[in-house]
Image 1 (spheres, one colour):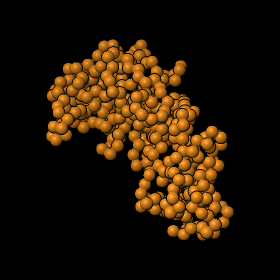
Image 2: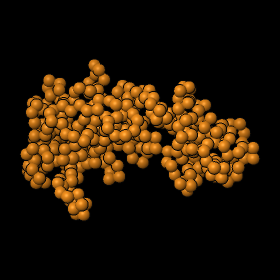
Image 3: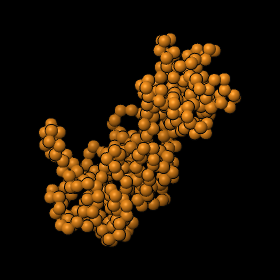
Image 4: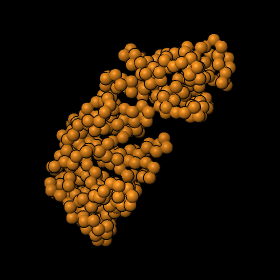
Length: 374
C-alpha cells in the first residue's frame, strides 16, 4: 500500500500510540497503556522489514493530503485499527478486511468505537500491572446500576468446581477483564491471571436427574425437592452459563430468598472415551421442556419446589429457555432467548440496604438482551 514519504514505519506506529495515549487523562493509565501496547505488539522490537509491513496496514491511501478535520479522523481510525488488530490477533487477510471496515466508518462512529476500545485497553493494561482501580469501578457500577452495566458490557461466569454441603454457598472468585473478547469474567480464584478476588454467592448447576425424587425417567418423577441456596452473605450472586437451563427462585413470606440452577442434560457417569464415542447424555429434553416440567405442566412430573428450609410459603418461579412462570399460576412469560450458538448468564446484586436484583444477559451478534428476573 502507499506509504507517506515523510513517515518512517516506527514513527508512524509511535504516532498511533501517542494518539491513543493523548485521549487518556490519568498519568498512571497513560504509562500502563503505553507499556501494554508495546508489550502486546512488540512493534519497537520488530525487524525493519517486518515493521515496514506492519506499518503498511495503517496507511490510508484513500485519504491523500486530507484537510485538517480528516487528519484527526484518520488518526482516530488508525488508532482504532491498531486496537482492533490487537484484540483479534488476526491474519493479514483479517487486517485488510478490518482496514476496509474502519475506513468506511463515519468520523462519529469511529470516535465512539475508539473511545470504547480505549476504555477496554485501559482496564486490561491496568489489570496487567496490578492496578485494580478500573475493575473496582466496574464492580461499583455493576452493583449500583446493574441494568446499565449489563447493557454495555459482556460478562462470562465460570461455575464452581465443588458442590456446597449446606444451604449457603459463599466462595471467592476472581473478577477480571479479557481484552481480546471485551468481556468481564468471573473465574475460579485459583485460575491463572490477574484480577480482583471477590466473595460471591455461587449457585451450582444441578442436572435434572440429580434432584432427589426426580429419577432418571424423562416423563415421570417429581421436582418438589430441589436443594435451595440462600441468597445471603455477599453483595453478588453468580451461577455458571445457561444453555437451556432454568433459574428457579422463591421469596419466602419472611423475606428470605432461595434459588437454584437446574440443567436439562449432563454427562453420563462412564468412561470419558466411551462418553465421547457414543455421545450419551442424561437429557430430559430441550430447555423449554425442562421449564414446562418444573412448572408442573407435563403430566407425570410433579411441579418444582425447594426442600427444607425453602419449602415454606411463597411462590416458586421458573425462568427458563423460551418460557417462564410460577408453579401457582398458568400464566407464562417468554423466558430467555436461547440459541445453540450462544448462552445466557444470570447475575444478582444486593448493595447494602437494598433488595436483591437478578438479571439475565444474552449477547449475540453484537446485540445485548438483558432481562430483570426480579
